[in-house]
Image (cartoon, rainbow, N blue to C red; front, side, top):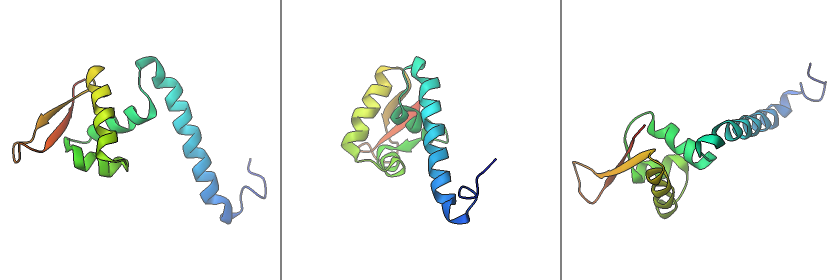
Length: 99
């Protein structure tokens, strides 16, 4: 049951934010035994929708490409993903799920 203050329409943004944080925290706990951090499972979630280039993936995650490169190296070492040269441009890398 929501209190009067919680049901105030002006608080909806805060409630949504708190719910999202609680959901991410719970998911982190459940996926930790698989060796997945929030950064890893968010990346896997985007890749589950289809192959992306490293540039596209960095944009979707809101991180810089060098940060993504380190994250992808950790995913590759864990057997979660693989990078390959893109068919349309060998300088461009696409990222694929492995599991």
